[in-house]
Image (cartoon, rainbow, N blue to C red; front, top):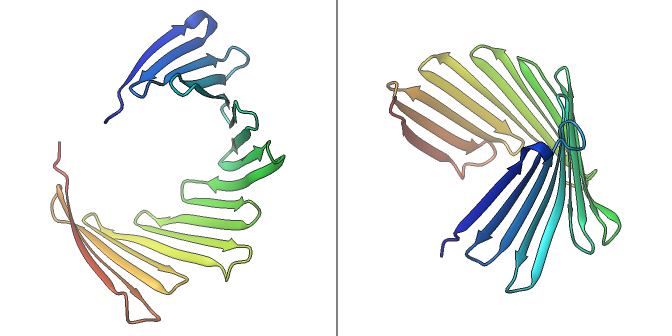
Length: 230
């Protein structure tokens, strides 16, 4: 049976506060209280709760979202006896980006997960790298060589793994009606695809994938895409 929901939303503009009451056919009552920029510019605080009267169960969480022109920081904590605290932040400056996220388990008094990311973006290329839990490492690079040529590569490595994973891909558009794509990974798998615009509304794609180290698992495909113009 599809769940049916109803919602009542009230905004108090003078106090920058929004109160939302929700109910669904599972007999769950929800309350969301949002406070916008009452305690600081760009700061939004949210209290989100759910109550199931038939089960006598209450759940809730507090969230904070601080958004500025060059940064955004978020945090969330569940209203339980041993909550998990989640926090994340992203900072940017002149095309450079840095992000971090962490989860802290108060039950074990330990960090449950951590991640870091770093990137740089210009009009012709995008660089991205990340570290997850100090065990997974990765990086990717996209470069627009010319107006009709694009190249991308990705690299990943895991502590204790058998080796690094990598892939290289390229896209070439020799004309407005034809797009050629190719990619290669560390498993010696090669994939090729060509997309031709038969008309402004119809495109045809031919593709194949094969392994350089084996004669098995060859794949071929054909697709048609029709999108009528407005």
